[in-house]
Length: 294
Image (cartoon, rainbow, N blue to C red; front, side, top):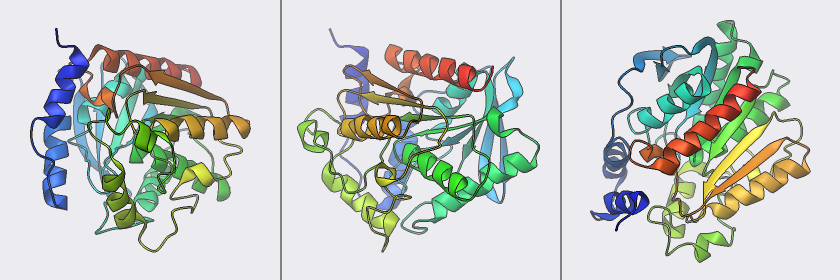
């Protein structure tokens, strides 16, 4: 009998991998948004600091608290549409509003465009009177790496840091040096070395892969707020998550690492049809509530 995760795998591998940026962007919007978000969540299109964004608000959430959500897609694809269900469900689980950001994408807008947009949005939230401790920042894959880059940029600029951060299947090493990049290649239906090398080149341009704002694995991580790292055991980025959790811990940052058996890259995207996706979001929500004072 096929399991729920087998059904998600079939969804992802049922058609040939698209070629070209436009096709890839359309494909991630299609497969990641295959399930609608909960019907009781309200969505409002907006712009913040000139960046397109979308608010989601579930009934009963604390509107003073915000999850700034940075979507995955290798810095080259992904959107509000593709991650609407994940972002809104995460905000709902955390008892807060979620603000999903449509930051600029490479190769049209390489590094540091995405980081500039994320920082501008965060600063705009502060300017609206939202307390730093009431802001959580999080995202999946590239959005996880961008979350760390944002916090380091804020720290180094002497700016207030968010209350906590949530990283799902984070991509934090654009040199792809983790052993699971190869050892998990046959298990991962989404992420492979050649694909990531293309994305990394498009995003970083002339910036070295070891630049800490490109690859936070190489950064000084001291002074960051508490972090939750979630990753599946069946993904090539497993070692990115394990290594960044270790680096955070060594830097005396409170960190919790969750490795979910048999789960694939960014599995919470399909929480509507995947029990472990709902469970992972519930765990993230509990973390967000605890760290955000909810």
